[in-house]
Image 1: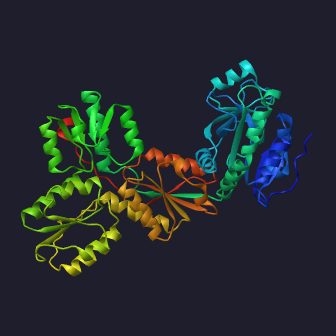
Image 2: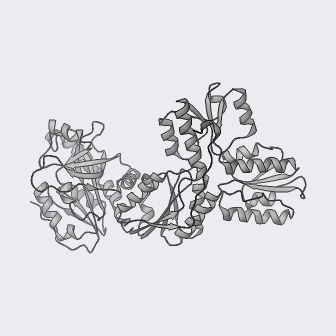
Image 3: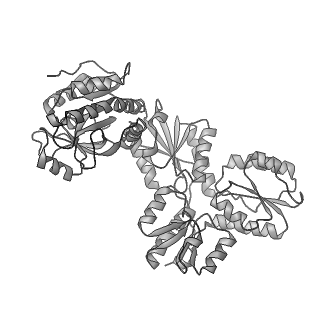
Length: 514
């Protein structure tokens, strides 16, 4: 019988290992670690006793790791299950432990994958006896991925304490039978890597506060563009073709794809006469002409603020100006604007370009700006251009859109109070990447993630306050997921910091108005 250690941990983290051989493998990866690996014993009774021990009860963060039985047919020995929740089997007798929800599972899974493990996330269920045959089938039917004998009772502590549960699949039949000894060795061999990942998780359980930068997430132009595709699908039925990504976010594109939108690189990829949506980033006159040639039923979801830049490009070109377009090469927005007057527009990407760009007549020069750039970067480029071309003409109003400016301002204010800044957005989102740069300019490490699973726990080691924002093309639900994941590290309710309020709305194109 195992007797849990009775030392006080002073709020440190504790890693529970039910079997002695599991504890030995976990300790191998944690020499000199601040956390204590406790051999807690097998089964419900020993686990309940361990949960009452001072070491476990006083732990600031608690993890359980060891081998378990795989309930999903796709799992193989050595695969790892990171629990999203731990619950007792339906037929458990006596006092039932409450289900323990583990919000940080996606981040921990990412850490374990970096350590070379094959990882799934999902529920883990605890039973009082080894689960065999039909019992395993019943447990699998509940959605659980793995079964063990201890986790539900070991984790039955304070609901707000950071907690984690990792089980390495030792078998997909019955636990610890002679025929599974080789599989057990395979599972045990994975535990040192599990311990290393859990060590990263424990180091990040210092997070206590989350500050949400507002405004964040969808802007009016993005909401309009997504609604255009949704309305087109309702009116015409699938498929509806979309040239390029409607907005630069992988989740939005995946959701619309599942509903019948077909994303293509160019109008040449669209069947003649088909319903086609132009993305929020705008298109060149050449694309419009090609769509007309193919008799496409085109619906323009270009953001009205991008349309404004196109109009300015045509006006400046008609005036005979050389137009200096401050933007990024290859971005769909700049490609579209360049197409308005390709012989008269020069792309200026940075200060060096501004120092070297050549124009036909220094007295006839104007500039335009990609709507999603960083305000400070544009200011640096404009300072050089104005010095070189004193007659440089500006657009009637700022080209950088209100949403970009507002989100950058909010991030700048929040980042100054935080140890790390998480920006939710896809890698190809220009405005999202600029928010990371704004945070870093404020002296705070900034990180771009597509969702909670993209957060690297090492970014948060020792950090107490985390700022969170999202690019204008990132769905709000992804921010909610990130905040939820951070709560699994110990963060309390998020606090909102509002830099400015937004109430902008754009009318839909006539083709999809109802």
